[in-house]
Image (cartoon, rainbow, N blue to C red; front, side):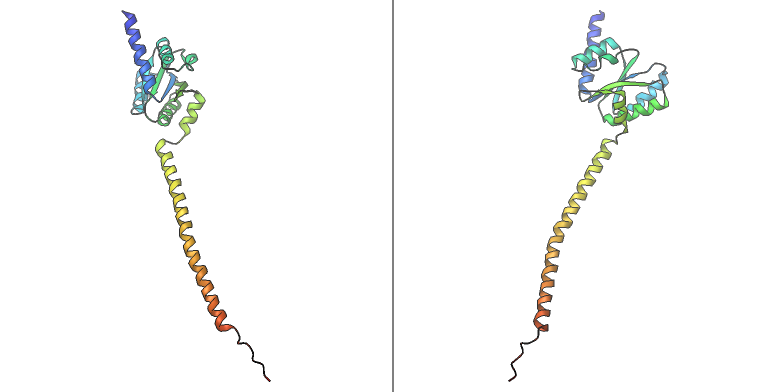
Length: 184
C-alpha cells in the first residue's frame, strides 16, 4: 500500500517542478514550526514552500528533467517551488536566512539551469521585475524623446539657416557700393 502513495507523492512533486519557473532547496534544521510558518507567509504569492523527502524529491526532479540537484538532497530538505517572480522569492529566502541563520540555502534551479547558493544570493540582489521593466520603459522613453528632439531640430535649423542666408543677401544687396563711373 505504501508504493501507490509514494508514486502519487513523486507525481505531485514532479508536477510542482514542471509548473514552477524555479526551485530553491533549503535546509531547515533548527527552525521552529512558527518560524517555518513565517517563512511560508513571506513567500505567499510567489512560491510554495514544502518540506520534502529526499529520495522521493530526487526521483521527481529527475523525472522532471532536473538532475543537477542530486547532490543537494542530503539532510532535512525543503523546497520553495517558485511560480511567481524568482527574484522576489530569492529575496524573501535571503532575508529570512539573515534573520534566522538556521535556514541554509543549498542551491536550486532556474529555468532548467542549476544555481549555487551564491548565485541565488546574487539573484536576490537584483531589482524586482517591475522595477527593471520600469527602468527599461524609462530608457526607451528617453531615447524616443531624444529622437523627437533631433527630428524637431532639423527643420528649425534649416529655417534658421535659410533666414540667415536671406538676411545676408539683403545686407549684401543694399550695402554693396555702386560701380564707380569713369570720370573723364
